[in-house]
Image (cartoon, rainbow, N blue to C red; front, side, top):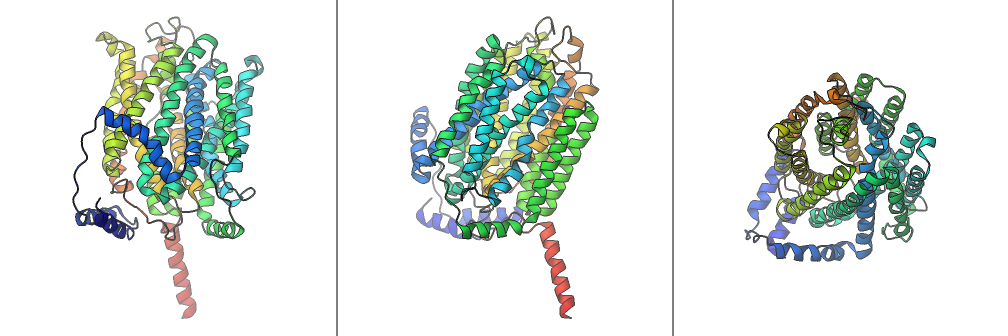
Length: 575
């Protein structure tokens, strides 16, 4: 932008508050019309991409500082990227060693998501009760110690001495670290992005591309290890990555500022004035704990699905009534778009990995192919997707980007249906070609969905409540995923798809293609909500001006109704 155009943009954008999509779109259009025209960027070349890659972290360091960038790199690349990837790849193999049926395998997935679901209440606690003046670092240290210890125990204790219930408990401790540390780091990053909004898409892209690159390294390792020694050694490999993050945390690389007594009093006063947020956090935490307990005690998939749907509806209703409209809409979109698509991950895992004596007609993928080649391919395309997003899509309109990716996701999901129906075998197309093609497109689309979602959340976070709000948004995905996993398990049960790694279970996969077709068709449902729930403006636009009085409940239905009631009561008393 020319200097005059930039000043005009800032002047106009400072007046924008996100009250409705139409108003936001009109003001943004007026700002763009008033700014002087500038030339379109030149076409990208491979040389230019390489130069951008080298100058990228240096440019970000100028804006955010070297120590902060090192902390971001260590936590997101090593912990979330490397350790998160290999632990996620090993989980199904580890539980499958107990011969857990496919539907129950998905139910256990909702149990291990418990740490993500209770993270909002933990984020609220971190904001309300700093330790020695620090809101984030002490909690990250505590959960890192727990996760490191649990991961080491899972890897060292012999499996005959480790029941599946105790193993699930240990996995929850590991995922508590993998959930809490990135959450609090993301909250701190959101504070920094709010100070440098123009660098938001660039920093988000840098974090994600590094995490994916580290995940690629993890994928290259874990497949060979599981082929030769099983899933348990993966936990011994991941344990050092979970523990080493304690070093930069204790050395203060995070750059967290100590909260003064006055700032703490103001923060607690603000939180006390937003009791609605605390209510939502408690609702999610208590509902998730009840769901996890039921999942461990009961094998009734229909009852568990009903409980998951009830929890999601309660959370959706509470957020819609108690939170500010812009934030409530984003949470509703993320939750609904995740929940409406039933997951068939448990059955597809056995479909791809069953040996010839278990499923003679199957693909018979080895652990190396399924966790290394398959994951590595997806991660390469995720990196390409992030680079393409940074280069060409970082200024796209939110609505157009989410709509395009939703349609693309629905289209390319058909490939999985073709594989499950074994139509590719009739056409002479190898399973590996179809699977890798499907994964490549899914990874591209995931990158194009997660980048704008992260940027949008950073824009909507109220000052001083970043950890809680980001946790609420992240929980919207996990609550939606709980619905998806349980309803997907119920769908598999109805269709008679209950493989468990047993001998001669070909009949268990006969209707799997029907479940896949249903899941693919339901992916178009979020399109109906796109125009209503997603802001109609560019990702680089200021949705809500920083520095204004902002709370997570400002303008909510409950807040507006309460203020009207108080006004009526005041007028009646005055009369």
